[in-house]
Amino acid sequence: MVYAPAPDDPLLPPVRINLLSDTQTTPSRAMRAAMAEAAVGDEQIGADPTVNRLCERVADLLGKEAAVFMATGTICNIAATLAHCRAGDEILAHESSHIVSLEGCTHAALGGFQIKPLAGARGQFSADTLRAALRPPDRHQAKQTLVSVEQTTNLGGGTVWSKPVLDEVVAVAHAAGLATHMDGARLLNACVASATSPRQLAEGWDSVWIDFSKGLGAPLGAVLAGSRDFIDEVWRWKQRLGGSLRQAGICAAACIFALDHNVHRLAGDHANAALLASRLAAIDGVTVQFPETNLVYFDITGTGLADDAFVAALRSHGILISTLGGRLRACTHLDVTPAMIIETVDIVGEVVRTAQRSRPRAEPRSSVPAQPMVLARTTVV
Image (cartoon, rainbow, N blue to C red; front, side, top):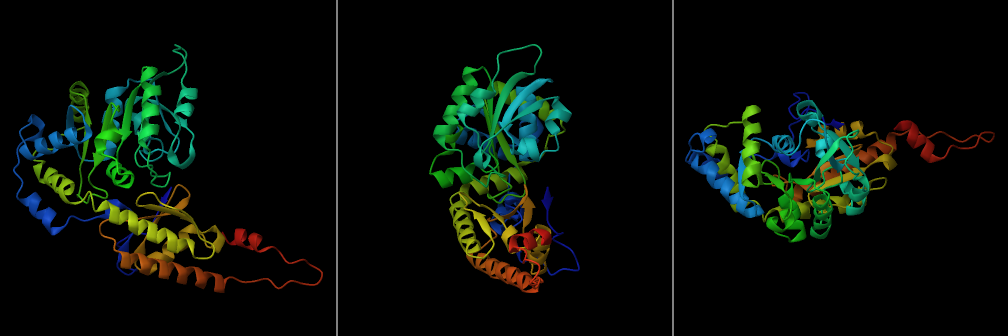
């Protein structure tokens, strides 16, 4: 479940610090200028030079033969699974992955696929877990066709799948005759955090995509890459899904600008996330999962506050965060500065202290033992 107050609620002050998601970034003046000056053509027939340049660049970046421009990363996941699988097939993915929890059961609705959820800490499953989930071909059961991973893991806390683990998963999948797909929504965050190239992390994966509308700051766009035959089949599904984008070079230009200017600066987002996590952890009652990239998940059960009340209180101060996967989430991005992080933590501390001061305390009686604080806290929540 995702909860956040409306950013544009007229009864609330304007949002000053937007930590809802890195999808909240707005294109810079320089990016807008690049978009305005882009050479364009009909993308559907391969005649948009800027889209073609972007696709060639991403294919090379990921070490693949070809690539296709899409409006969103979710469409990349949908088109990829439709190209890899047939109705009645089974996909294996982590139980908290985006295709399981945040895509409206699209893969069942459009493709007739079932997804076998795999367990694992911090949004990742091991090669041994995958191996144990595989089964011999059996006409009484779904055909296992595809293994999917999410890089970085969203509900896992923005954690990075390491190169050795990815290689092990690929080896197990391919040995069993399964294709492999990487949801690369924040792949470049993983590359910056692990000092590993995109080509290295994508090695061995049959399909992989990059999202440009998150930390890279473009208004929309994602590029899915793979073999030429695979991309030909993806194009068929793109056509069926109404995904032809006409003069899409205007948007592709923003993505090219992002590759040129907004990749290395992701390290700053990670530093801001680490700063936020360390300061939040110092507040009494707040428990934080220390971030590997730009996603900060934390729990306020120990403060006695309910999540929705806490989110609403921050929104009243002009700060926007969300709840996701049963925890609070704050996401750093290029529109968030260190000064905003410090201000956010100061206000969080104020909200927590105010709530704790206003919480009624029962006076113990001589004949009735005082209730432990944990029970009072649970009642409030």
